[in-house]
Length: 169
Image (cartoon, rainbow, N blue to C red; front, side, top):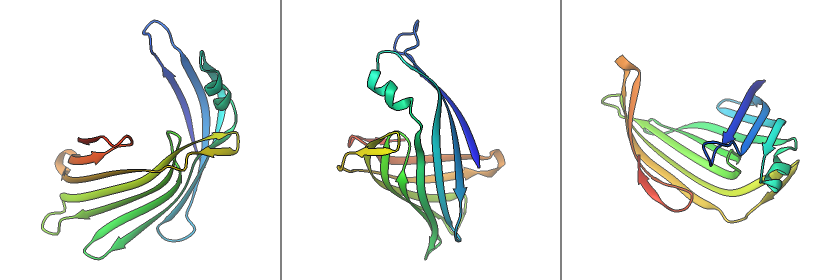
């Protein structure tokens, strides 16, 4: 069992804190077969002060699920490694995610990676889930270089984010 204490706050005005939340987030990770992982988490609010956000404050004062995911790692031909995940994620998102990774044969320090996800917005009201049926496509394509002497990885990626905006990272 994993326990993640979390403290977060948001400042809109540097002289005043508008939001303070302190939660305890115990989680369990279980593998039922090779390459598979189930993650279940529950969020236990210890202290919530969200001045000016009445609805937000009410939702976040309730015990509710956190991450609930089912993930499977796999290997494809040509030394391509992958992972598929479905479930409820952070930032009030649910959906599915696929990641592929391929190191180059001539030098394993170089690699390519691709990620794609279909997610929607939703939130927990205690243990009742409310969600929007519209899903958004996000993706990322990139190349990596790992420098083992300094335990450092350099990455160059093109990505599409939640609102359809695209960027280079």
